[in-house]
Image (cartoon, rainbow, N blue to C red; front, side, top):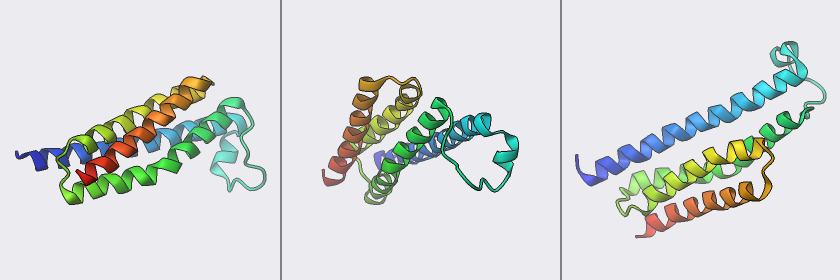
Amino acid sequence: MDAASANATYLLTLLCLSVVLLVVHILLQGNFATKDRGLDWNAGPRDGDNEPKSVMAGRSARASKNFQETYPAFIGLLLAMILTGDTSGWGLLGGTVWLVARIVYIPLYLGGIAYIRSLVWVVSLVGLLLMMIGLFL
């Protein structure tokens, strides 16, 4: 397998893993919301006040929203790297950094760990920056 094919395979793996992470966010948020409001609320139309009631439901909802803010940029950069056949290594590193930082972010946010969580968020942005750099090298 040549380097471009190997890189594309790695990038597609990152894409698939990012979808798994998205599903984890959805399941966490849904689980905590259902614990707060019950199965009838979850199965119903969810009319009325849908604000999280418990601390964990609120944290999981905010962590999910935070993930969704940078997820489109990650997908766009990843697809651009695949289309251009990025072989610089910077993009591969950046995508990996973003994904790992986003995974680490979840327990930090749910645990209420303030400053380290913010640092991990910055690291995820560095990952996106590395992906952009990879596109130009």
